[in-house]
Length: 233
Image (cartoon, rainbow, N blue to C red; front, side):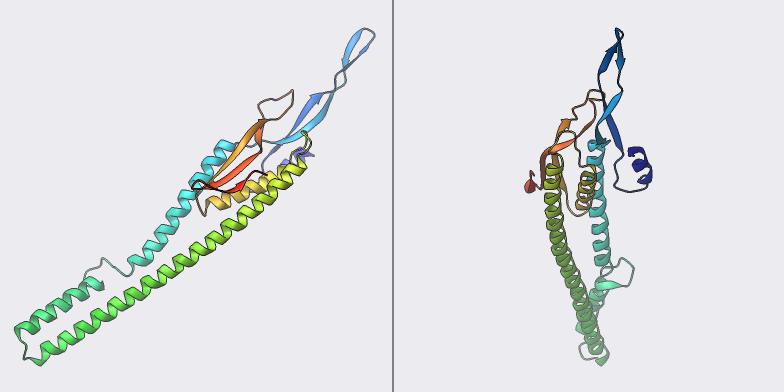
């Protein structure tokens, strides 16, 4: 059943492959000979690499931050183009030139008209740029609010999952593998929003055939910049 489950979920993004851990049933003695009685399933554990997952979350945080910064700066850069003869810088130069021309020929109507037009153009350019930057600022503020709401939602769901894990794993041979997969998914989603650190106490599964299998235990803490948002079960 476990092998079939691994195969059917091979393409599932957040599924962690599972392994059946077996223990010997002991032996019986018959005719002076000890005969083994096979093995029994002790538990089904996840083959989870916490260190690699930690590195993945860190990379996701950096990637999403870089993408968001690039998108925002691109919007701002559109209001300050580097192309020649465009943007506020060019409008300011035209405005200063119009003033110089007017100062040299204050009685000519042409210089007066040119100064008025240059003043209007510069004013419109500054106002439009301010409006655009104000719009970008409001969008960033909205994004921050939405991000905080999503962080709170994820934190609440993780806290609920932790309680479910604790209840399901009341017996040492029971492992809430699907719940742990879901928690991993939420942690990765959270890492795309903010740099969060999940501290998990590592425990060795109590089996006699493979003592190297580990999976984070119940001592769980999720923090952002040193502030805990989920603490324990």
